[in-house]
Length: 440
Image (cartoon, rainbow, N blue to C red; front, top):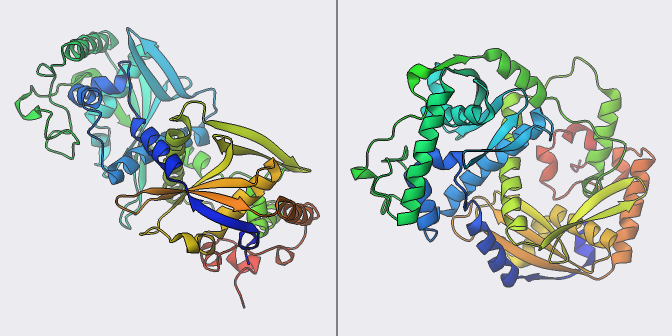
């Protein structure tokens, strides 16, 4: 039986916090300053400001957040914080470069990937060209990742991009900036060009007037740029992306939730052999995109309510961690692919690891009540629920944390530690043959 099943006093659905987080999620992405992204599709950017009542449907919003977060997770995997998500400003235009070390590096995600240089779509090149202009670099790099969808594998391509006339790019940037300012001031988009999403899936199709607008031109003319596919870039990135992080000397909060996994991972580091099979790039990127979605959504939820989110450091001997709090209550965010909302009475049985985690966080931070936000990726409308979880004995939870940590610190065999739950989890665990979680 999972720890949470024995220590939870009750679970309440919190509609007040849910409504507050829903409003924060809707605010995600609204911009006030003119950005490089605005200049790529001026008419779409206009209606994002002029018609905040028009929101993407939940599925599209989810895809947008996944792409946003994927950039950050990808950047952290292949670079350092010093160079990831670099803010730049130029001629009253702002931008955020995915990675900026020696040259600007942009990452794009797509559902389809044309062959050769056609994968570097004009809008991708335009955006990179503007970043190169803003930083005074005539060269940049572009990565295009085709998402793994409907059973088809993903793919990653890398390009070296050289711009021949940054002065011309600057002129076009300034022209678009002024045109956009005029449209915002007059609340009249009639002079703005058609956006690239014309006749595609556009949230503003019913009001944008793109059908009567001038065609969208290029910021960077095709003759003013040289694009060369570079397989060596992909090889280098593959090495970085598939080099799995090794457990450090300190234990983490999640090691208390999955202690057998933690023990086996540390044993695997000690026993690792050079000839072991390398991680698969497609698996790494697909998992990274899902993680990126979670990161972006958490950013929208946590930071969309100013002052509501804070982190509290917690420790227990060799365990160090931070507990996220929303309005002073320890809060964890989790996403699931279940196709319908789970009944409140079945939550702990379905998601014991969610509730074990919040139990440990509450015990180590001294809070009798915690909060679990469950986001349902596959549900069409009511995408997430907020639950307040009340515990009856923090001392009992802390004693169990101490017991599990002591076994991990002593290097106990996996079978001496509590198994991962629920019962289906070992079927999808890479350590399945060694962990003994699965009943004989």
